[in-house]
Length: 496
Image 1 (cartoon, rainbow, N blue to C red):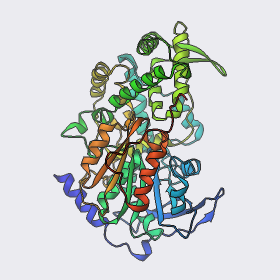
Image 2 (image 1 turned 90 degrees about the horizontal axis):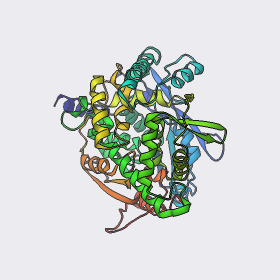
Image 3 (image 1 turned 45 degrees about the vertical axis):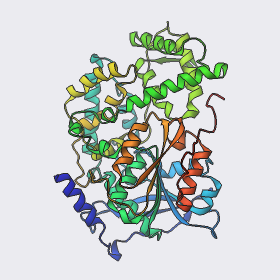
Image 4 (image 1 turned 180 degrees about the vertical axis):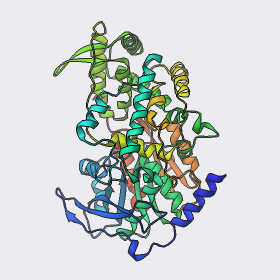
């Protein structure tokens, strides 16, 4: 009840008028390929809006038809940790994500949220070389009890390094503060109400914004949606007792998508490199062999060596259906070479995405702090969901040791009535934001309607569906929801 009262008071206080001296402003300049760039100054701490400030990097693709322009569409591409500037440059003209018609009607704007890339990035190392060395030596996800202690120790070291190196911003990178930044951006572009498209983690940002500023919603699309209360604090008392993605049952989503991968591969015949024979038995053979020791295959640049940890983690790549053909090739090569073994070297890490991911996620959510809990769930989840159970146990391990806290994080309520109904999109088989979580998230909200695409992969960004883009477009442009009984599928079979 105390958390509810705190959140409600924050929601009330943040909605108060901002003084002219504190208002954000944007001055756009050409930054190539049709994009315009700017920066905006925002408070580090919204509880002290006259105090220190940071600059957020912002990018815009102007509307293609100024005569028909509706306004600004803000986009967060997920993560957390990904650069909005980079992703808008790469993806703004993907027709299945932003059709010509949608781009003609809106300025599409994204930004690097606080703590990420060009916006007061969380830096936990003195130099790039030090960062690369640290992550190159990071132990793989443990697949047995013997691997857990070094994995825990390195995860703890990352939390300590960030605490020592990242500076004051580390205590102010919660998604609640990013939502307040987003409202500053809304005002800076002159919009009375916001139009927003959030993908994956961007749905969590959208849900927090919708509950902090419920009367400022023109249109919101949540694409590949999360379960918001579960993500923040867990259902019941699970927040401090169950690892985050385990309590969200993400591994079930991975396993269900894996089944679809095998099914579609078998149906595609020679177009899928892993087809032929009993595919479940073939994958089981790979797993059993890799658990005994690494498998070596010939790669384009020489021998590649794969551990079971590395192989099982490739299941996260089910998120992007464009990766499925290459995954099929990899599985077949591993199956063919399952009698060979060698050592696998680590790969260097070259961005701040890992630091930012942990800084934001660990600020937002409750986590168990006893490593014995993770060890216990690793075993029980592997029994419940073979091959993939432990993936969701260890994927945010540093949060067990995270000491920096953002007292402004948002934990609810999630059901404040918004000025517009929210459209929630989700694929039926999504390994990263499973449909059962999206349904729970939609139920958390006061006004939301869910539309399920009959497909697989993570969000419309990574699982192209022109049909679903039309559903999104008609909602964003005219507030129109899909007709009852409408069905959308993916544009193509990933295996051709």
